[in-house]
Structures are given as structure tokens and as C-alpha cells.
Amino acid sequence: MRLYVYVPFLACVASAMTAHALARRNNPRIAAIVLICSGVILAGASSAALSLLAFPALAQLPLVASLGHWSATAVPAHVPVPTWLAILAFCCVIAIVIDVGRVLMQYVDGLTQALRVQRASRGAMIVVDDPAVYAYACRPWPWRRGVVIISDGLQRALDEDERAAVLAHEQSHLAHHHGVFQLFSQIIAAINPLLRPLQREIAFCIERWADEDAAVVSGRNVAAAALATSADRGTHAPPSFGLAHSTSNVCERVQALLDEPPTRDGRFLTTVAINAVIAVGAVCLAAHSTELIFEALRR
Image 1 (spheres, rainbow, N blue to C red):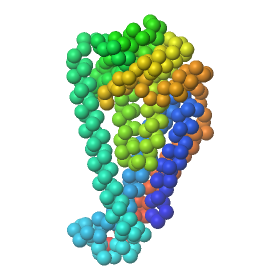
Image 2 (cartoon, rainbow, N blue to C red):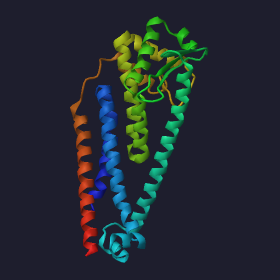
Image 3 (cartoon, rainbow, N blue to C red):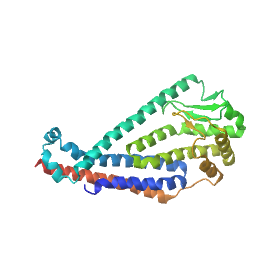
Image 4 (cartoon, rainbow, N blue to C red):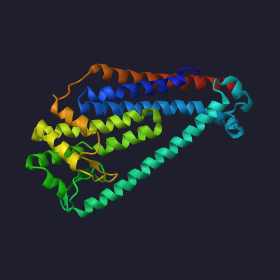
């Protein structure tokens, strides 16, 4: 347990360092899925490791010791985790639970607002009488149809082909359930702050994924022009439940659309997969070692 329990945190740091390159050197659809999957695995492994570090603090409580049939005073001498570190880990576990609860409450609040928007619409698109330039997609629940909200200002700012590109971009968000990707990325970052770079890169990837779908419909140059124009003239901040067209990483996304479509760089995909496997293996070994220690304390 002495060393294994810390490996998942190192794996999280390694994945955070490679997330930027993975997101930009691979097809955005593949990169988003890989980052989400690895993020979930690493968040789970690191939270399990943190729980193992926190458990000795609980094990010294008389009630827990009596339930486990070991001596509370013997725990500090036999468990290779300093008491101060166990207490710190326990406080971190509580903070994580609170932070994840906050994320989920914000998500539920966003779902409620999105449901109101959908009930107010009669179709899959709402055109808002607003001179500001914006477009965003929202879906109340993953299994319900979503709605694309487009302003009059955006309609006037773009030509017909560019409007089709924006609509294709937002419909891609709905078709591929990018709101769920966004939720999982926020939960991953809440569970482990070391994985916050993954949250940023997942957000970038789902926008690039939608950009590539828009490019299929209208062409890469038209999709890039629509994105640049709406970003240049847009001043409206979308609601928290919406996936907006032109509010993040616009320069990089425009350049990516003007370049050739990305392929796949197996080096970074392999690195992320290895990190996840190592983290899971290490936390399993640490859990087994902890089990052996407390079994010995019962004798």
C-alpha cells in the first residue's frame, strides 16, 4: 500500500499532461470518447486511492474499530499512512462529495430551464427576436428531442450556407448527446482537480466534433467562415444548459477547419490507455494490501 496507493495520482498527472496533444492530433470524436473514458477510469481509481488513504483515520475511531474487531490503538503502528495524511484525505473525500453534489444540482437546474425552453417550442428550432448574434443547442434529457435556439441577429449576419453550417453544428451536439459528455467532464474535474485539463480538452473536442459535422454539410471553408463571423459579432453569453456555437477556442477551431481533417495519432491514445490500466492495477494492489493489513490486525 505504501507506494501503490499514490500511483493513480501520478497517472492522473500524466494524462492531464498529454490531454492537450491528444485532443489536437486525433479525430475529435475519437479524442472526446477516449478522454471521457480515461477520465472516468482515472477519477474512479484516484477517488478509490484517496478513500484508502482516508480509511486509517476512520479505523482509529472506537466504533469503527469495534465493528471491524481490531484495536484502534494498533492502527497507526501497522498502517503505513501517517495519521495527518489520513485525516487530510478524509477531508478531501468530504470536499469531493460536496463538489460533485454542487455539479449535479447545477445540472438539474439546467435541465429544468431546458425543459421550459423545449415546452415553449413547437419544433426542433426556435428563432429568437434578438439582434445579438448567437446560437446554442439544449436537450432537457438524453432521451428527449432537443432544441436549437438561433437569434435573428445571427440569421442576418450569415448567408444561407453559413446558417446551414451553424444549424448542422448545433444538431450535431444534440445527435451525439454532447451535453452528457459535458456533464461527465464536469464530474471528473470535481472528483479530481488534477483532471481539470481533461475537462477543458473534452469541451474543445465536442466543439470540434460538431465543427467537423458542419463541414460535412456545408464544406470546411463555409463552416470556418460561419464560426469566425458569429464569434466576431457575437456578444451574447449562452445559458449554462446550452452548447453554444462560438464561445470557446474559436481561433483554433477555425484554423482546424481550414486545415486537413485530423486522422489518428496512436501514441497518445496508447499513453492514455496505459495510464488508465496502471491506475486501476495500482489501486487494486493497494486495496488488497490494505485488506491484508486489517486482517492481520484482527488476529
